Amino acid sequence: MPTSEADRVPGYRAVPFAVIDPATGEAFDEAPDQQPDELDAVVDRAHRAWHGWRTDPVARTTALRAAADAVEAAGDDLARLLTREQGKPLTESYAEVARTAARLRYFADLAPRTRRIADGRPVDSEIRWRPLGPVAAIVPWNFPLQLAAAKFAPALAAGNTMVLKPSPYTPLATRLLGSVLATVLPENVLTVVTGREPLGARLASHPGIRHVTFTGSAPTGRAVAAAAAASLARVTLELGGNDAAVLLDDVEVDGIADRLFWAAFRNCGQVCMAVKRVYAPAGLHAEVVEALAQRAKAVAVGAGLDPHTRLGPVNNAPQLARVEQVTKQALAAGARAASGGRRLDGPGYFFAPTILTDVPPDSPVVTEEQFGPVLPVLPYRSLDEAVDAANGTGFGLGGSVWGTDLDRAEAVADRLECGTAWINHHAELSLAQPFAGVKNSGVGVAGGPWGLYGNLRPFVVHRPQEERR
Ligand code: NAD
Image (cartoon, rainbow, N blue to C red; front, side, top):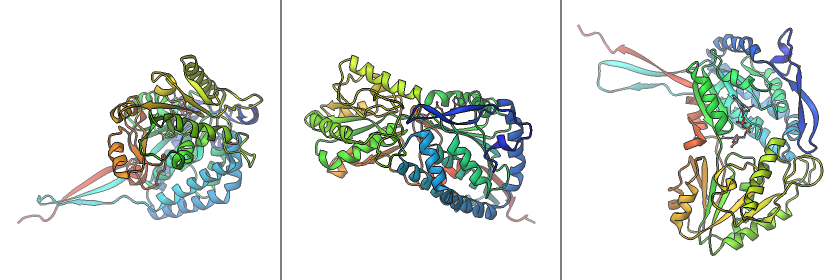
């Protein structure tokens, strides 16, 4: 079965690159290292496929529903491969596959609304919505399948075609997903390309691409926006975050500690909108540190395929080195590890779940995105101080406020400068809601109908109501 463009192109000449199992640190498979000059043919085919795909919304709905069924039917294979290359516990991989299918189903049934303008002029103005053309999607390694679906489900539902590039750290589950979807979608409507840089840079700047939708880090997002400027393609950027959780003085620490812990440590902390900093009232700080450290010490860390594992490895060696570096910097500056604080001995990219206290507020583990299983807990004396600190980084993806008085918590949440603010939980998303970061966390809006319209352009038709005689 063809699994990617690589398998379909006659004379295809990519040499493979190794894919590492983060639980062992060893290569376990390989993926084609496609070259930038192959993209001309790929984008050309996506363009030709667009002319058929854009014309029939009913056929699109049927195909996208069938795509959701096909993803579920392949769930076991997708989940196991995802865990193998990404590292996350198998239960989380199954959940990711389920969310991939759910996104396809949600967008299969979503259609743009044609509107008429009634402003008193003797013309009928009708706003219709048209697709853009071939869309390029570039995604990271933390949620390869569901982030890809967050791109292709709205883009295809809107009548575009897509060229999708996963991270070189996690190309395999996406290749398999591409082959599963190829059984139900018309040829070249969705093409998966794999390879190392500059493949992504070339895709972002390709003149045949009309929208570049990117999820990843802020520095790469800037490079993608600059590359897309060459052809003035539309750009949607979903970038990093440094979400703060602000605990109020009426919070019941025991009651929220499990939720708070997992809001920070799910997927080994490699979640754009994970809790990455906790601000606790000075009087509760020690209790919060203790409650989180207890959980960090007790959690089962191991290979994702082991059914006992709740926390897997960090996905890749550079990311592990970064987590180690920001932790060492904080410890050298006077922080104390209430749990963890170091790499685990043995093979694989494992880092002990770490709760840091006495952290200098200007430490990179506070001011930057650590993206790993390390959480600083900082004390505050006044609520203004906590809100200022929460808003005081260059990011603005999400944030949360935790307390017993929900009205008071909501009033504090309203002061957070971010795209989504939660009360007494964090990172819960509905498929129907908009998702948009501010500041360095993103440009454009994904999710819900906003995600659909982000892949469409308005087309307006004016006609006289009646010729006057
Ligand atoms: P990254 O920016 O290094 O890479 C993301 C993707 O871009 C990968 O596919 C990579 O191969 C590709 N890429 C690298 N250089 C490129 C270039 N010059 N031009 C085009 N593409 C290029 O990010 P990562 O390390 O894979 O992922 C982690 C980051 O993603 C974190 O910052 C995290 O917060 C962010 N993220 C954001 C969201 C969100 O929705 N806001 C979701 C998940 C992850």
